[in-house]
Structure formats: C-alpha cells, structure tokens
Length: 548
Picture 1 (cartoon, rainbow, N blue to C red):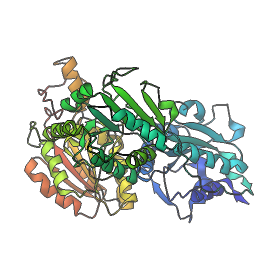
Picture 2: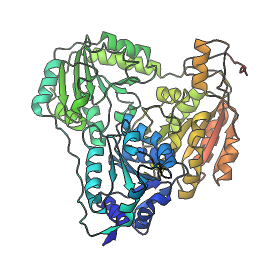
Picture 3: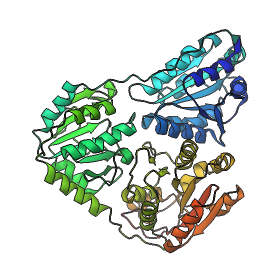
Picture 4: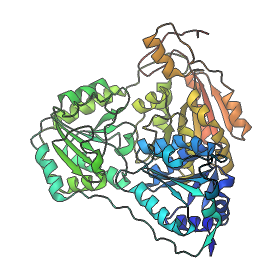
C-alpha cells in the first residue's frame, strides 16, 4: 500500500524522469513526500511561470516531457505562461496542479479553479485524477499524449483526496514514443517533385527533432545541393556554417531570403507549421494554395492542410523523413547548385555586422560571442528586439544550442538557461535578455545560485520596453507613453545573490567582462548600458521623452 503521492512519484521514475521543477504547495504535500529520497532532482523555483519555462526548456533539450508541479489557483494561473510556450513550440511537457478535495468541489472553495476549462485551449490534454488507483493510467496517457504526434503540454490536476489515500496498484511501464514513419515510397514521391524543380528551397522546423536528424539534414544538403533555411527560432537544426545553410525565417528575415521565396518554384516545409512569425503574417506563401509547388511533411496529420494546401502532403515525423530522403538521394549533382550558392552568398552578406548607435554596440557583442564560445554553447533568450541581433549575427553550430520561445514569451531566457545548465553542466550557457524581459523572471537568479547553475546572463538595459516603443515611434511619432521603465542596479542584484555582476558601458570592455563572468564559478550577470535609440538591428529611432 502506498499513498497517492508515492504512487505518482514511482510512476514518474518508471518513465525515466530524473528532474522536476516546482513551487511547493500544500495542495500536493503527498507528492513532495514521495519525492523525498526518491532520486529525482527537485528544483525549487521562485515563481510558477519560471518553473514551467524550465520544464519546457528541459523538454526541448531532452525530447522527453519536462515535468513541473504547482499548487492550485494562483499557482496554476502563474504557471500558464510556460504551458503556452510548450504548446506553440511543440514541446513535450507535463504540468501537475494540486486541486481541492472532492467534498469541496463546485463551491468556489479556496483557490478552486476548473482546470479543464482554464487550460483547455492551451494544452493537448487536460484531465483530473480523482481516484488513487487510476494514477498510473493517467500518467501513462499523459506521457504518450505529450510525446506523440505534434508534441505539446499536458495538464493533470491532482485532487487532494487521491493523493492522501492509499492503494495497492501496479506501476505502468515506460511509455515509448510512437511516430508516423516516412516510407521509401514517400521519399521517392518527394524526389519526383524536386527533380523537376529549378529553384527549390527547404525550410526545416517544428518539434520532435533529434541530433541525428539535424546531422542528416546537413548530409542531405551536401549530397543533394539543396538550400536549407530554418523556421523561426529553429536555427540550430543545421550547422549555420554549412555551405547550404541560407538563413532563417524569423521576425523580419533577410530581404534577400524573402525574395528567394518569391523566386522559388518548389518549397519543402519539413516538420514546420510555418506559423505567423515564420511566414511574416501568413504572407510568405499564398493561402491556402501557394503558387509554388509545396511539399509539406509533419508528424501531426491535423497540421497538414490546416493553413496551406500542399501539392504533396506526407504525415511523418521529421527524423524519418530526413533519413529516407538521405537514403534515396541521387548521387548526381543537381541542376540547382548555382541557385544554392547564390542564396548562401546572400546569407553571408547579411551577417556582416551593420553598425548601430551608442557606446555599446550589440552587433559587436554578438560577434564576439560567436568568436569565443565553443560550438556546443547554449544560448537562450526571451522576447524583445535585442534578440534580433542574436538571431542575425550568431551562428548556431550544434543541435539544441538555441533555446528561444517561438511563442514570443518574455522572461523565458533565464529559466531556460538554468534548465540547460542543470542538464548540461559542462556546456557554457549564455542568456541574452532585455531589461524588461529579464525582470519578468529575474527572481529565478536565486534558483541558479541555489543549485549552482553557473549561467551567464547578458542584460541589455535601455530603460524601456524597447520593442513597443519602436512600434509607437513608427505608428504615432513623438507620442511615446507607457514604455519607459525604472530599473534596479542589475549587477548589484546578481551580487546580492552571491553571483558575479558587472556593468559594461563601452563595447571595448565587454570581452574582459565576459571572460571574468565565464570564469567566476558562480551565476554571472553582465549589464550592458544601451543607447535608447538602438531599438533594432536595422532601425535607429530618435530619442524621445515620455509623455506623462
């Protein structure tokens, strides 16, 4: 006989879970008891949003569901931000939430929330465990749902009675991922379309990728001569130094790459949904029927034909598609080599640093990071214009070296960096954050200090919500309001946690500060004192005084 909390923890161990992220709550005390001496690493976070973002990043890094526990009511509402990231980023994750006892239900008891209604639009599956005996069944279903098809988040609420009650029940065995596989005939159908192309372009993205698949993409590009671009914040799916890599379709992609779409006659969407950000507001391709020959592969049949009507749609997971394409690739040089070389030349011109304004030039900071960090370094970021410098000038050279939310969630960078450092303590982990972005989750710097996650955080401080200010200045010139913020001394904040903190007011001082931060042996923060006019890697806005 075991109480429900112990049964749940034992089920997690059976699924190979080695780490969970949580903010403790009385609504799931038996689970905390089950975690005692369980061998599962318990990471205590400062905010539920930070916990779910860490779990989401863990899911990205491992390909298996990241796990978070939060308490009911405000704990759950706080946690919803990370669930949204997991949904839009196609990341396997499971969120467990404490729930009121059955005898209190439907009375608006203390912190009672209908989690099915609340999380229904955000998660792949939302359920409530009401009986102790069914805990293994729900855990098995949750892991299978999170991993299969298009990966995503699952939310399970834990009725308090079911956790405290005891039962004699067998644990479920490990759940294995089941994915639709690409056949040789599927691959040959793709090649049949491509062989008639003069100007093809492959765009890779989506979830459920592996290091092997990323390596296969590089080999496929080299053997076939195909140009390969990446979808929004999926730049680490192919080594950016590869001769066939031609850039990414993020927010405001290279104009030359955008023009290549217009000139292309055949486009292969490999695993990506090509959603709003990657498609430039669904303007990259005609909707619903592109004028180019469109080949679309995706692990979830529901995503095929959802927006774009493809000439050839194949329901298969990306690793198997790439493997089959590589196995059936014709050895003769294709006719599109000159097209690929030209697209690559466009990319190389685009990443030549263009100077912006101010004593700290972010393009030079990113170029220096690219020069000194090893290929396996992991770079994280949240949302904000500062990230556009990183995406344009940094060359991602290893799979899962980029952790960035396609959902555009502010505050993601620091929790993701902590999860990455805990999972890969031997790899350098650097987080770029805007001052507004960082303050969404900056309390998690305490978690980094507590668990020895020696990340390096680079805070771009321009005392404003710069992205919104840029839009204001474009749409309503001279009428800036609600975007200026008063900031703390970020370097001193890091030192108050026992970390390293330093301010940089000139670009020339950054290399020395980075070297010291990397060698500090504690979580480190470098505050870049940015010019408010440098609002974008492309645009320089005039300084504005805020209107009261």
